[in-house]
Length: 306
Ligand code: CDV
Image 1 (cartoon, rainbow, N blue to C red):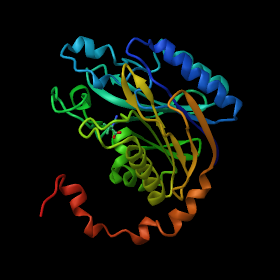
Image 2: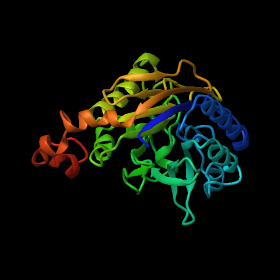
Image 3: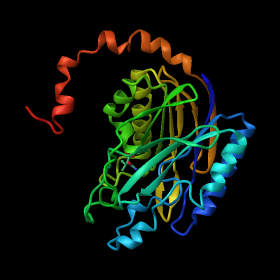
Image 4: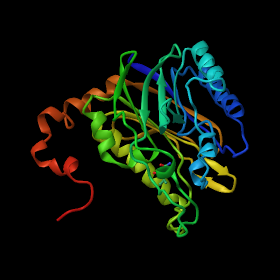
């Protein structure tokens, strides 16, 4: 399948007290709307089933684990998978994954239009910190609750289109995009929970934060000649604001659809995967133009060295 009608299904705030079941109801509402709009694929945010719990400092691992899913689908999410299959819509969404071995990941999955999981990604670039940080306006404890993903930036053939996933902070790293670009990716899906306020620089402002998000996604799409969908969880969660700004971006780096609100909102675009070909065969024909003999530092060092 080369032409996909894609829905970016932004979610508004999810409070700490909201149940998974209530969130799944909202996700199914957006899915029904997507079906009315002829969508083939719907993308939801990072950690879509709960509030953004890494803002809360917890010491009791049993309490931490209440935010994680032990299987997927599970009782709470099965109705979403069933509804997606009824509509013949592929879905992608993020959740906190607790494996049978007791490992914790910030994960996204992708299904085909029959509701079968065809791809999984575990977040690699985990922002934030491990211990309570008194210097911040609020906490961001992803490094405390998750381990870095162990699946790489794999891509998946989903009904004839090459698809990949990233999660939130991953979008700011060109390496994320290039590793998928080198597999010929045609659609990158990512969800995010980005605070409207910089916890380490309150004066930064929402405009700059939206700009940096969009800049990262549009540049990644253009430089790898791929479609991209970036979907927010937005709104005020228990007093903590998250920004919106969900977008669908074409392989030239242009935004073709954008949410306006900070609530539950669906925007759609018709995405012809063959449009990736021009960029991939010309200015970003990697096989002809890349100079890997000069890229060694990318994989041999992390910090700055002179
Ligand atoms: N969930 C995230 O990864 N959020 C980060 C914030 C902390 C900067 C982001 O890159 O949007």
